[in-house]
Amino acid sequence: MPRKDYQQQLTELRENVLYMSEVVMERLRMGLDALEQKDDELAWEVIEGDDEVNELYLELEQECINLLALQQPVASDLRTIAASFKIITDLERIGDLATNLGDYSLQADQDVFPEVDIQELGSLTLDMIEDAMMAYDEEDTDGCYEIAERDDDLDARCERASELVVRDLIETELEENTEEEVETLLQDVSRLLLTVRDLERIGDHAVNIAARTLYMVENDDELIY
Amino acid sequence: MSNENMTAPNPETEAENDDDAVSPTPGSGAVDAGDLETATASSRTVIESRDLDVYYGETQALDDVSIRIPEKQVTAMIGPSGCGKSTFLRCINRMNDLIDAARIEGDLLFQDKNVYDDDVDPVALRRRIGMVFQQPNPFPKSIYDNVAYGLRLQNKTENLDEKVEQALKGAALWDEVKDQLDESGLDLSGGQQQRLCIARAIAVDPEVILMDEPASALDPVATSQIEDLIDELAEDYTVVIVTHNMQQAARISDKTAVFLTGGELVEFDDTQKIFENPEHQRVEDYITGKFG
Image (cartoon, rainbow over all chains, first blue to last red; front, side):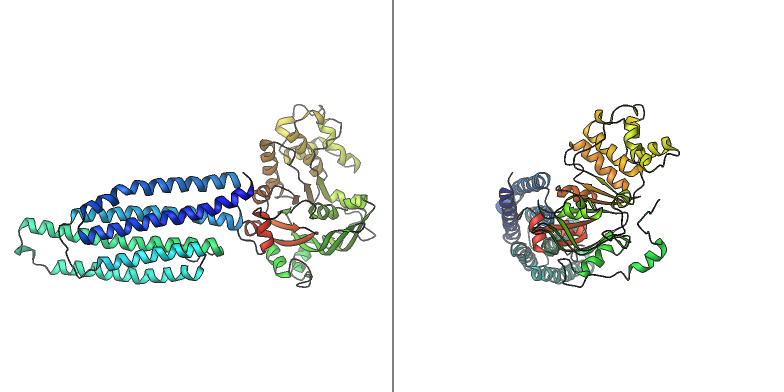
């Protein structure tokens, strides 16, 4: 393969990673909407749509492997491929977590703890992914550091939300409820805690994307781990 | 080892003095002094050029090259055709003396002694700085005599069998040829012939081995054997290798020097740094194939 085509392939790889991120973000939006609207149809669409994300992931993984094997990239080209290789793994995991939201939506009959604003947390994670991918697209290192800082805020919000739920559960006088009501409450609480945890993890994946982008642009591993 | 007309400094005082070695004036060459310090921080300098210019008639082949090559490491020289990397290699053991039109300015020091000083005997110099060429060039003699050749020239024939065996073992060839030492070196495969040439080079116990594209005429298996051997050789010798194969440079060298058009040494640093994050955009463009 001539080197001209190789540069074109590198450009296409980055475009395809951006496309995958758009698909994943759409799934996440749909998962959040399904939760908010208790929309089973939308929830199933997210869950079944995960196959498309997985296929995209495998295609892009193969693109990276082909470039590594056939072009033996070095320097910034190598960093672009290495970073992209890691970023698609993060995107695939975000896709999985979006399907979890679909699952939780199917299981939930009613909102519990409305004071925990899942939509607000979800919106923050979506913004983080979008901005991390913009940093990847525009090679914006300042943007990478910003994502890492915003994740601290997201973590704090998630922790506060979890504490609120657990504290409330402890204060609930379970003996006043029937066994069935207690079981439902425990399931609802458990599902809410898992939702918060998944959103917090999506934030972590956004930071991973920013960290790999920083490495790609400046060979700087400061944000990795 | 015979020093003949070359004066080897005391290794201990040399190590102490190394920090005080004169750095080229920053900005005077393509590689600044900071690069040089980084590249040689962990090892003693064996070969050093200072503001080295080489001309072939009116054509300048090397332009103000300053570099320090560390001891017992593999230093790779890469760059496009005509960039001067082979010229630099051939300056180290004065192979360019054989070219009438070649003119050299600046200093090229081996163990702190300028190899172009009048009192340096090029033949004696080449005993201490061996060379392996692109095409394997065994003599039309037996395997044994190929390895013993240099030793006999130097009248170092005591324990000759043992020295030949050691050299062949050092070149990772002994096990393959120990039962056919009387057979012609020319009957060996290309990869074996190249290892025989390496055995011939190390038999006379040099300090430096220069290699000019030593694997470019070999198949991938023989290339892999030579690359493994280069790694082993660097335990005992300083190896300087010119290669067109950048992946080979990345695989086998500790340091990499990048020469670009006009005989300019643009960057010299740890190999990992050069191939992951070079300082100079021109080097980045060259190694990624955007400029040739």
